[in-house]
Amino acid sequence: MTASGSPARSRRLRRTSVRGWCSSRGSARDDPETAAASASAIAEALAGEPHVQVAVGPAGVHSDAPETFALLGEVAAKPGLRRRTQANEQVDVEVALARYGRRPLELLDEWGWLAPDVTLAHLCDVTPAEIARLAAAGVSVTHAPGCDLPMGWGVAPTAAFTDAGVAVGLGTSGGGSKDAGHLLADARLAMQVAPLVGRPVAAREALTWATTGSADGLGRPELGHLTAESAADLVCWDVTGVADAGVADPLAGLLWAAPGRRAKHVVVGGEVVVRDGELVRRGEREVAEALRALLRARGPAA
Image 1 (tube, rainbow, N blue to C red):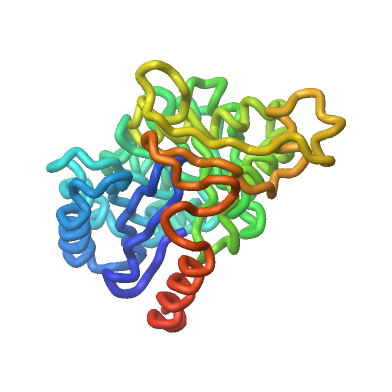
Image 2: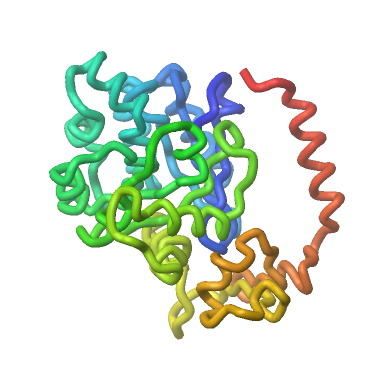
């Protein structure tokens, strides 16, 4: 999920809820001072950009030193940026125990990274005591089953987080560990694997993780729901096709019947950005070619 190499390559964009993007400056094994300077520059450059939220995001205790967490925490504190990192995947736990003799969440707590402005991704290997610790700290978590399972990291006990009062969001991870970023497909996967580590999860609960829970993880109470005070964000899907003909609950059918379906209409901040399945501002082929050109220019990943 975290890029490595030069500071330019360590900027990451990840889709969050329905509204825009969250830009998170990663730091996998980067020099702490370099990472902090780069994060400050990115935050300044993107300040005021519409539909963009900036966060700082060291990769985790398995790859970043305490100094990196401290300096990036200082960067986040000045303009009040959100903080996110990864924790308690298999590799994270193994490296933390070998290097520090302690588990990752113990270290993050000591380093000041268990707090209400922090979101932790993965958390596949956690104990009941650690779940209680997260709840007490007010940390939010991001479930990324579409990454965790292929990487062999296991399944996060997401229902247990919810039952403990921890805000749960849903993430699709990045291209380093997953080829696609389809949130509906990952919501379905989250629902399917939940009984492997806890109680079953209904489709509506998984969709709540993808909407309200993700918004909570961003510190954005105006997102993830439709009320009089919420942002004018809306996604519409066509549920009249053959795949939905036998579906009793159309909302659950979004996951069970055809989770790979594309949105028919998308409204962001009151502006229609997708109409009848087509981008409004730019053609899809134009966007795809621009992305391919960008990847070709960057060359192979370091």
